[in-house]
Image (cartoon, rainbow, N blue to C red; front, side):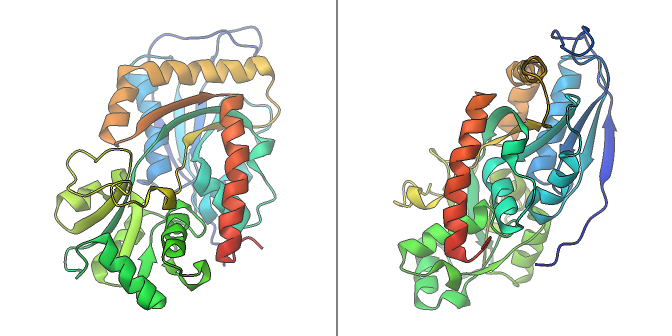
Length: 328
């Protein structure tokens, strides 16, 4: 796949409040200078929403008096931004948001020379439900009918939703496998973000989409999209659709953990400084509003707990992508 390097988009967010935490950096308080938060995806996407949510929580709930800059570096399942971020070794003021499955898929699929194991795990923060949707004019009213069509003629159902090898495509692979359809027979069109996926759906260029509820909700509420199922433990407020658990398909969905990484080369003290800052953020009322607004569920896994999840999911992702014929 040809990868186009997209220009970074930087937006400064001014923060105010009191300084927090003890820093191993020059014996002062952390953070004692400006923070930089990279979102390795497009503006308006899930990673961008998370980065700006963290910055907003820092500011509005006065967690720190340091400034923060959110920068978007989209492309190749997050690996273009990852390659740039990896060069910031030893700097606890550089942070990157991501989610486990999407970025691991990007790494495997694009044969990235940079692996998450080389970075410093800060914390897993949340999980967010995804939805399987069709345009309002689609003939499909239920997920079963759509899967029946895919089983009968796999290539006739064109799927879209996120990057090549991302959680959307992996979920589709699981659904296909449950119907005896080989992963390589799936007709999946990758995109750089939710906006592009929606254009394909609404124009009729794609049959069905898989993306996060947070990204799809505006079109769902406007009546432009019909939800066939949601990947969550319980039904999502405001969305009239069954869960994949209700449909007996919970095992086909790939669950991804969203979190924050820091560069390689941080000391244990510096890692704890950053973890402490994120812990204050996630306990703030501002962050709780971000979770609620985006239908995210908190899943706090600090430090090495997050690192363990990334290691385990790397094995899972590699296996699924191997079935799809990707990353080999």
